[in-house]
Image (cartoon, rainbow, N blue to C red; front, side, top):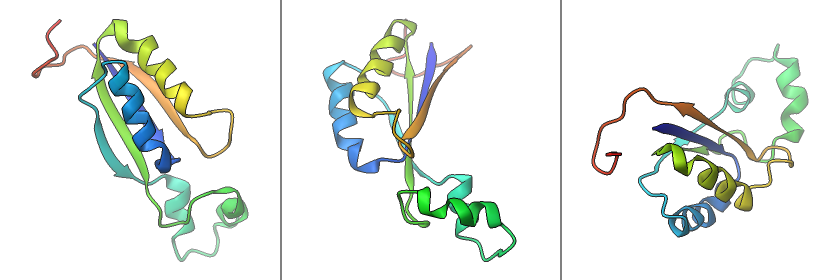
Length: 115
């Protein structure tokens, strides 16, 4: 089993992404609201964080806007499918779109996770 994780900055694409996953028979994803470190620091009252103040103009979202983090436990044979489906919706070559990664799981138990 694998754990797919996507931190999605382009939250307006969430619906398209879920439809793409459904077309590929990938289900059971969990979606959480999240916020990155840079956005959190930008929202702080600290004036000595000059680096983060200098990148403020490059962040597409407002400092209080949340990202979405999507988790999905998938079978090994679904890894390429979910990665390709995500890349069809999200153009990772553009800045401030998000990140995705896949981790190996030693153990996963739950309805639908049987091999």
